[in-house]
Image (cartoon, rainbow, N blue to C red; front, side, top):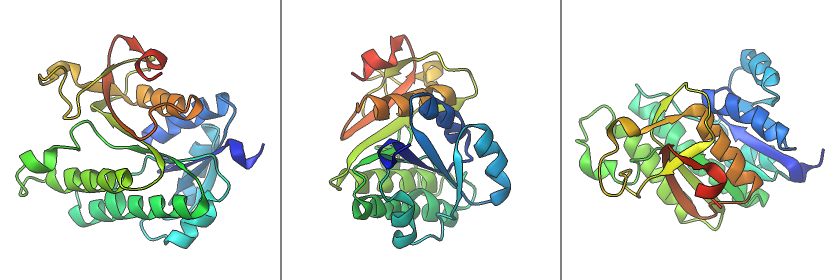
Length: 227
């Protein structure tokens, strides 16, 4: 399979990434799943991915550029998992920015990042002393940097993630994560499997270019919501 059909997924052992790999391979792509721990290789291979051991928290732009060289797209689905504000900043912001720079250096224009629906506004409405603030700021700053690049980016903003199976249907949300100006409440959930479906769709259909797409599980088939 040619490099033009290769997608590099950062955070390759995460739940969303493991759900994305088989969807991309079914669509005709090969998937390099970047992982930190070699012990995760078996799970990646079972999902159809090719494990690439590289610690993105420490990897420099040159190492990432080498990993991306010749790929069709980069998907940043990594995350520190919360809890440690300093590590959250290193992974969710700093490593994401290095990945963007590496994609530019490698000539890989297509860049998809998994953020969350409130990332654009939460830094202005959450108390900095709130434990969630570090995550909100890291995601906000990474997304803002991506918008300032020349990359063909798509920023995906799902809601509260669940383990429900994909429906293949979503509801688009406003820039601040609301639905027609109202808080989503119980509607503000997104299955990880649907996130994987959206990642696969925006890559295969070249949809959502230079867009921020906030979405929840909903009534509209993904190809209709994101033509």
